[in-house]
Every structure is written in C-alpha cells, then in structure tokens.
Image 1 (cartoon, rainbow, N blue to C red):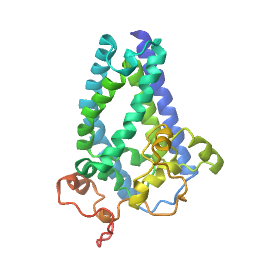
Image 2 (image 1 turned 135 degrees about the vertical axis):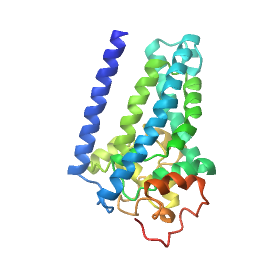
Image 3 (image 1 turned 90 degrees about the vertical axis):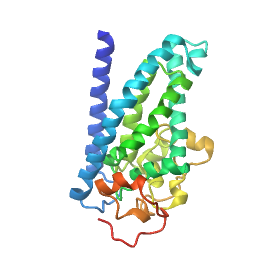
Image 4 (image 1 turned 180 degrees about the vertical axis):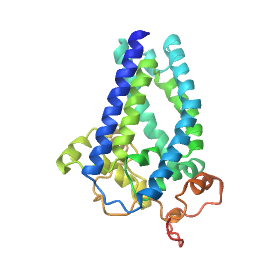
Length: 273
C-alpha cells in the first residue's frame, strides 16, 4: 500500500511538471495566433472544466477503479486471458484502452446524441491547453459506461488503468496545446503520438477536417484506419464550429445539447461573443 501511494505521488508530480512545461511552452512558442480575448475565453473553459472534472471524479473515477480491481482479481478481459507476465498484460490493456478511446471519439462525432454533447468541446474559437478542459459535464457522465466497458474488455487492472489515465490526461493536454514544435520534430513525433499540429487539424472549422485525426494518444490508430490528415497548414482554417460562434459562453454551452440544433457547418449570422 505504501509503495502504491508513493508511486501515485511520484506520478502526480511528474504529470504536474509536464503540464507546467506545456503551459509555459505554448505561451513562449505559440503555434497559432489567438483571436479571442483571454478574459472572455479562459474563465469559460475553466468553469466547464471544473464541472466536467467533478462529474468524472464523482462517477467515472470510482467506478472504473473498483472495476479494474475486479477485472484483475477475476481475470476478466483480453489482457487477463493471455498467458503473459503481469507487465505484458498491463501493456496489452494499455494499448487496448488507447485504441478503444479512438473508437469512442469517432462515435462522439458520428452518433447525433453524442455529437450534441461533444460539440461543446469544439465550440472553442481558439485552441490551447485549456481547450482540453472544455467538455460538457453530461458528456463525461455519458462516457462513463463506455469507459467501464473499455476496462472490462481490455482487461485493465489497477496498474494499467492508472498508467493509461495519467498518459491520457497528459496526451490530451499536449495535443490541445498551442505549442509550436519545430516542424521536423512534429513530423517525427506524429509517427507515434498525436501532436498539436495534428490535432489542430481536427479542430478546424471544416467538416472534412473535423472528420480526421481522431486519435487521442498514439497516432497509429488514425494510420490504421486511414483517417490521418497531415497535409493542412495549421493556419489553413479557423478553429471551432461556424454555426455556434455565438454560443461559446458557459450558460449557452451548457444548454446547447438540449436545444434545437443548427447545421454545425453553416456560419452563424450572429457575431461571436
């Protein structure tokens, strides 16, 4: 137990240090010129992030951790069924968690009910590490059963789940960031990881681009499924959803999934605020 707590503290410290590097780096080496006023945008993302984090902490976190213990104890799921040593089982479960997160991301775009919720994430008219926080709280609640299914099918025990959870949080913060890496580094990193340039294409305000680059961690899943786009300059199209540039505030974002929907890709006649 003591060793486990020590590992969690060390992992948290490492995650915090990496997040700090990303946050400082994107301010010093921005990839895109920010257009919205920080005083209007930053509080909105922080409030939505606090609500979605609270929803995850209340439901998804406790449920998946308890499930992971049961999965390991009863040897449930793909990784647990394989005749492998524990670390290899953890690695297998980690990869399956990462792949099924790609599947979930595709579903959030392709299933209308899920898109209503995920749309709130795409409303941000700029993109930086704080965009990684901008999710609807109900989106997090709806994703909880799928996350439980991921754990059960993959066979992720407690170690694999915590390793993947830390990796996922850092990966999401990194690829949403406005960090400008040297083009050569970005190309090399994108062979394995989802980079800021790569995910920036996914957030561009064109449906054919939003329908690409769905990987959240490893980029291999987009390569395997033919959904990878790297041929678009980072400033080729604006960020966001054209029809909802007037719905980016906290109250409007929270109501959005429950009101009549517009065609997301038809520009709004109401100026953004």
